[in-house]
Length: 546
Image (cartoon, rainbow, N blue to C red; front, side):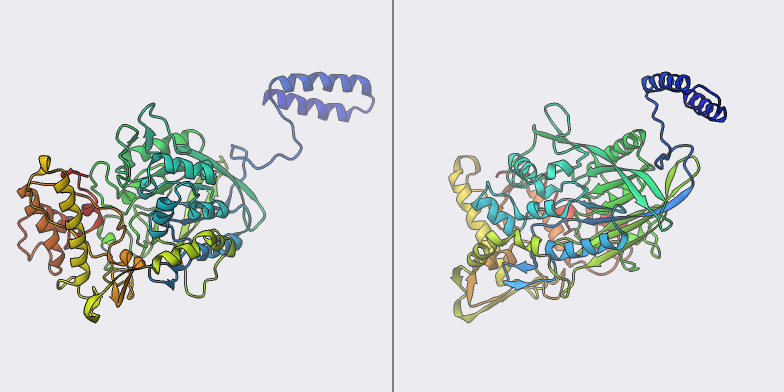
């Protein structure tokens, strides 16, 4: 700075003296320029706006757009039920483009939070043509995300498959995964562990603000064990502990604001170590300014007083703020997108902070147009999947009709069929391993997956011919069967878990649940059932046979 000032003063002085020898002036300036170059000083007549002490105070709006839990739903068509649906990435991308156009080029960032695969379509492609690029990854490349992270289901098809899909699609270049490392050298192996995106955003007055946006990506530490065990290959860190570390590192590297891409459910204010649902706790990290979350397949904020999330400390019903920060979640399968507008304020010192913020969950609807390019990524598989799903595999006898409208109240043929199929599979496994398991008794757990929980049409209803496509309505992810060995004590506790679904009224104050797990759950969440993903997904205390 001292040298810059000297040069400026010299030039002003030289210009004021008309009798100065031009050759001498030229030589003098030339000598000083050489010195300036050696000191890495660049002189410009109109410097670009920078975040330093000389920056002018201003504010500008930046829009954040995101998708999550796509689960292979590339197009607005359900192959199993053979009907069009009001969801799909081809519809969601229309909403993304509209959200981008509303604010102009340069004033937005677009993210995805993982679980791009794992549905009927991605299962089929994985099993029938494992070398093929999944259409969903191809479509995501077209959208042009600024950053993505990975969900637990992205690991379902194995390490090598995931690496190949990311590299082939080019999505590895935008992947940020902070809490998963190589067990060999403890280094990040899926993209980068964090990144800074530098954006020039323009306000209504035409002023330009350069903002450095720090990005971290967190995923469920348990990953997946569907097709491959990752023990010894990958290590994971607790989401909260890792986020604190990554956010601090980003701030140290110069990030003005930090956004957490969290493939993580809402959670509580007192989560277990390495819990999958940590979004609430991420809002308590001082260096994180915005939390985008998924995994749980719900919308938040809802603005509904009956929503149990609002019973947690510092979750505001009116504003939707969580611990004073914006936390947004959207449903799965591209039923909508999340849009967050952040007002960024820069003071005279160059410091940038988040001021007001507003959010919107934009839902895909019947009249939402479908992007043709995204639709085209399924062209190779469209007729193949339709033919496969329309393949007859059996007939429902005696003209009966199978449905699960009353699955919570009585036995029905659909759940019973799943039980019988699982028992048959397990019996053959035990017989083949008789020396180890002898004549051990076998019990079956069958989960009703379609019972109206997501929408009025969310039921299984089958009559006449039984088609291949019906299997997914009977049992989601039907390609995976797990066999566990357990003690009598564990079996008793499991039966209590199953029975808890029928405890639907009252609270811990007027019920007499003696089971510690049930009581603790009721006290902490206000819920009345343990039959939920956080519990069903944790079978670590049982011994897996296969």
